[in-house]
Image (spheres, rainbow, N blue to C red):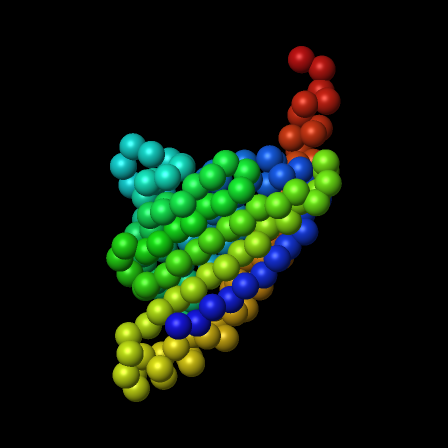
Length: 158
């Protein structure tokens, strides 16, 4: 198993950070290497929602189906793959103050055992680490931009 973990401070309130990351339409904007992320079925967020995901990891294109296994508004979203690469992804949200928050990102992936699996893991690990680091940076900048746009929109006269 390989695990990557980052905590990013966001220049946005907790509710805004959660709202942005909970919207599947934003995933390809912040998730480095993600090329497609679409709901499968009737739910487009929340516990039990399922997504078809396609991402580039280094030289490889990876297709996965991800299911939301934990969802607590403004606190936690966790996904587990049901097909494709065996992965678990967790976002944990915390308020810093009224206008700042943190998002903790934890990604675990498991490859088949044996010599081939270990070799593949060693090959993919640098790509996964770089992608996760870029994703964490994107989370911070995209949430701040989203909040700035939301704030500007709400300040506009109707």
